Image 1 (cartoon, rainbow, N blue to C red):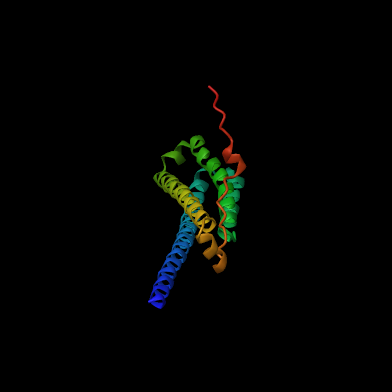
Image 2 (cartoon, rainbow, N blue to C red):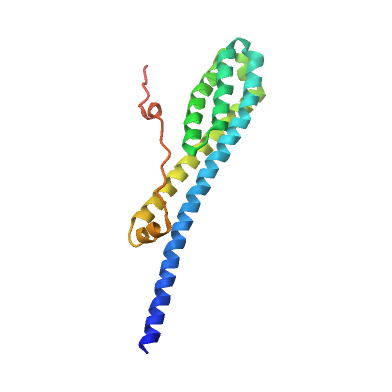
Amino acid sequence: MSTIIIVVVVIVLAFIYAGLYNNLVRYRNRAREFSSQIGVQLKRRTDLIPNLVETVKGYASHEKETLSKVVELRNNVTNAGSLQEKVDADNQLTGVLRQVFALSESYPDLKANQEFGRLMEELSNTENKVSYARQAYNSQVQLYDTAIETFPRNIIAKIHGFKRMDFLQIPEAETEVPKVKF
């Protein structure tokens, strides 16, 4: 009788262990999925940029320095290694793209161009998707990191080598409060 109780207890503990382990795997894989989604949206964005540059070139040929910088920063995003490097490069690209968008105010014909308008709308939609993917990634990383640090999962995490994941950082320049003057 005591052998049966011991076997049942061992089986129950094995199921609990497996469940806790599987939850850790699920959290980690979801964080990886969100990381991948950020990459997908950044790729989508970098694919739109050559079309934007070509459209602007026709109207603002003397803005070659700005357009060259856009192409250079786009290549930095494409060639970046880690997710944080891609995000950092993309943040630099965002700053230069704002200059390109500002060009449309100086060139009414460019602003009226349907292709330019469509590209700006696509880039804006992609920006929103990138922001959402970053938020979702950081939320999932928080869940994962909490799971590997709380008892009893922390024991299982240590045994199986689960490591903390890093949050995506916002550049210091973007955390400053904008100055509004009237």
